[in-house]
Image (cartoon, rainbow, N blue to C red; front, side, top):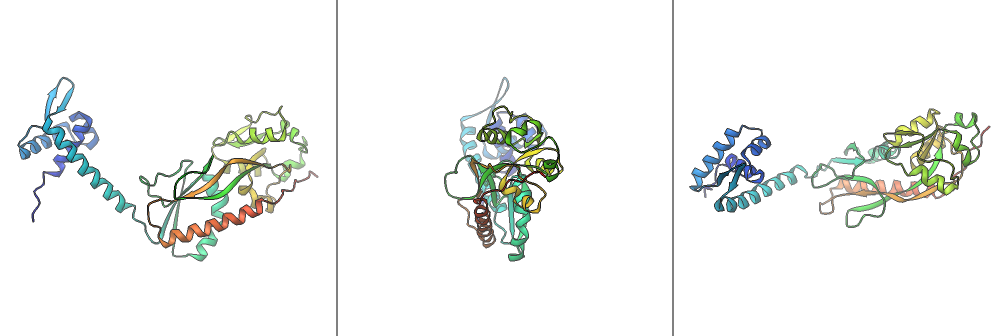
Length: 310
């Protein structure tokens, strides 16, 4: 059976004009001329044999017939948009799109990713970094990892890593003067931190009970990865998350001048779309990263040894 449909470009122009209460607004949204919008709507009115708009002092208003047709048109276009978006987001069996915080990606995931690739060489992993959590209904993302102040509710979340804070610096800085033997000695050193984590130094300083140190002073960087590089280069003392400096501490690129480590109330969680079926590649990645996180958490449960200046 042949469908009898109104001209679709005209229907789209009508829906935009009705939603914006303006032919000009519709023209700007659709990137056409106002005259083109007027012609589309005139064509649609002629096809329907009804008047859809009346002109008023500062624009246009829908007629009763126009309001009724707007509700139908909006529902149809919303459904079409939603269906197209779902097709675009259909999972690719061999592609994983990850959205991660920059420091988590650079300091924890990427150094481990070769192990996942060795097990699943056919999976194409694509990483983007952002400090914002993913909106799975609007973004082409399969996995999002984000630091939450408290456990998120609802399905689709798996806990990964705790946040444990400790100061770190380069071995060379520890050997220089002024001395760095007690937390109070931080008062004579440059404090490094991320702009996205302004509460880390104040939290650690409060736990160390050195009230005279201003945890908000020092040098602040766009993300913690940059601040950690500055610490490796000897610029100052960084307040770090232990999971992100574990390899550097073992390799001797960084040292921990104090034993005190301070857990925060936050933790990193893995998130996936709660209503979307997981392809095998996503299930494999989820199992792998949860195991890697468990291994990291087990190591972080052990005491940290404070480095001694020589």
